Image 1 (cartoon, rainbow, N blue to C red):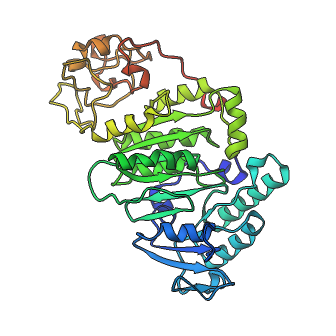
Image 2: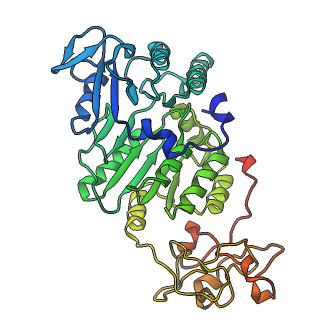
Image 3: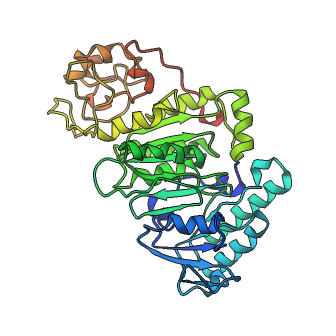
Length: 413
C-alpha cells in the first residue's frame, strides 16, 4: 500500500543507498530465541553460511547457542548494518525507535497485521513506521515481509525454509517477488541447476518496493538478468525509472504481473496491501520500458535463465553517424539471420532503424509496429542521428507480431 513517505519519493533507491539492507556486513536479530520453530531461531539457522557478523538481541537470554545475547540494539558492540525484527506487530514501533536511536541504517519487519488487513488503525501504524524510517534515513523492508536471500554473501535473512548454496561466478538471476512465499518457491529451481544471485521480497512496501529492488539489481555485478513477479507498485513512475536504469545497464528485465483481473486486485490488497492498477496501463508501461512480459508464472524463471545465458553482442561497423556499441541485439532477429541493431540511440523516427543498417533486411523488423514522430531517418531525407531501434516487447517474440497498443499516460496506472 502506498504510504505518504513512499509517495513523496521521486526516484527509486540506488544500489549504494540500499547496501546496508542489500549486502549487510553485520546483522542483528531482535527476538532471537532458543525455542525451536520461532522466527528468531529459524532466522539464525538460515544464517549458518553468512560471511558477516551476527548479533542476537533478547533480554530474556544471556547466550543462545554459545553466542552472547544482548538486552537491546543500543548496547550492541557495534551498530549493525541490518536489524531483523522478528517480534510481533505491537512491539515493532518500539523496536524501530531503538534502531533509529542507535543509528541503524536498515531494518526488516517480519510481522503482519498492518495495511494488508484493511483496518484504518493498522494502516495508520504502517504509515507511522514509514514516516519515522524516512525521517531517520533508515531503509525499511516490510512489514509483512518474509525476508530476502543473498546467495553471494550467504545472507539468507528469512524464517522460511529455503535452498542452501552460494553463487561465485557465471550467469545468475536476480529474482524479485512481492510475495516472498512465491519467490522462495521459485528459488527451489536451484536444486535443478538454476543460479540465483538474490531472491528479494518487499511485503507491504512501506519503504523499499519492487522499483527499488529493480534499481539495485540493475547495478549489481553478480546479477545477469532481473526476474520480477509483483502485484502492484506504489508509484509506477519510479517503476519506469528503475526499468529504464536496467535497460541502460544492458540488463534484461523479465516481468510477470499478478492481479490482472478484478478478483486478483482484491486478493492483492488483502495479501500485501497493494493496488494492482489497470492491466492495460501496466502493459503500456512495460512496452515503454522495454520489459519482457511473460503471461505464465511458470515461464518466469525459464525465460530469465535463457536471457541470463544469452551473450551480449557487439554489432559490426555501421554507416550510421555517431555510431557506438549497443549491448544486446534488440529486438530479436528473424530465424537464421544475424541482424544487428543500429548502434546509434537517438530519438525515435518513423522507420525505427537507421539508413544502411542491416535491420532493413529482416522480415521480423519490417513487420514490427512503427512509432511515428515529427522526425524521420535518412530514408526520409533527414538527419540519421534521429534514428533509433524500437525497444523490445514480449509480443515481438511471437511469429506473427500483433499491433502495438497505444501508450497510456502513466498517471492512469
